[in-house]
Structure formats: C-alpha cells, structure tokens
Image (cartoon, rainbow, N blue to C red; front, side):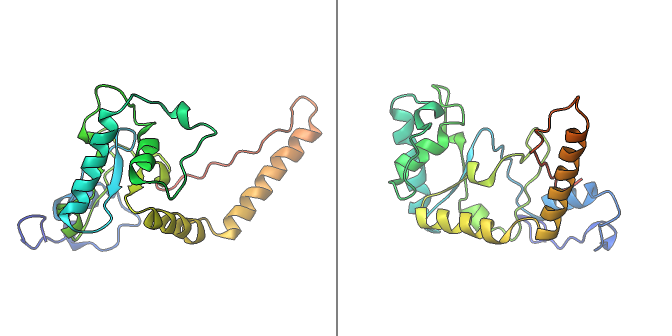
Length: 201
C-alpha cells in the first residue's frame, strides 16, 4: 500500500526474490510504500519517546530545549566521566548530544523524533543515500527516553545481533595467519589486531 494513499502497489515486476539483482528498484519501491525519514546519524539522534502518547514526544522536545538553553558543552566533558545509565533524561540526552556538533546553531532538528506518523507507519525504510549513511554504532544514534528500554535494546543487540561464532573463529584464524607471516618475515612487526566486517554490498 502506497504510504499516505492506501493505494495497493506491488514490487517492480511483482518480484519477491532480490538476491541476485540490483536492488535499487526495490529501495525506491520501499520508499514509496513506507515512511522514509531523511535521518543523518551524524547530525541528529533518533529519539524514542517513553510511550506512544503525544505528551511523551513533547517531553523529548522540552528536554532538548532545556539543553539548548543551557551552557555550551563538548564531548570532552564526558571523557572518563560517563553519565549513569539511570540518570535523569536531560543528563543522558546532554551526553548523547555532545558529539552532534553542539553550538549556537543547534535547533530541534538534532532530534530525529519517532513520533506519531512513524509509530503508525506499516513500514519505515531507512535510506542510505542523499548524503546519509548509517555508518555509526546504533547506541551512538538512538536515544531512549526510558533508560530501561535503552538497556534492554543494548542487551538485545549484544546477545542476539552478532556474527555467528563460525565467522568470528574464521576471522581469528586469518588474523593469526597474518601475524605468523609477519613473525616469519623480520621486516614486518606483528601488530595486526583489527577486524573490519562489512555488511551489505
């Protein structure tokens, strides 16, 4: 169903298998039938209200305004001085916003609000073009008004959304082989410990 019109739309060619073809048409289709917010994780934080009530969204906006009206701060303020996970929302949001370019030019655009239109959308398509790419850690982009929801989501990702052990073990073997090669070749220092796994194409 096309977003906002209730008109039935099928995927291009009514295709259901997109494994071996260019998915650009699929992405365009998803943007047509879903809500495709223009979020940039380097400029804003996705703010999840504590409930679906309108007052919860307003609470996020009010909290941001308190921060904007306060003194200017930077991420350095939080180095070796993290905010407790169960701190009041204004303190947690202040820390989250510290790396979003806090200055006098800030506006309410630094919050990408998960508001009523998004809550009611049947599909949300997160696009990765038009200057926005999600090359950031989820916990540096998503802010939960409810600190308990924040902890739950982080624990869920930690426990369930990760590479399978077989992949991690294979990667460890590759790193060890590179280190062994470096040890056997006196011209190189064996310091490799990095691992970069790319998702998608």
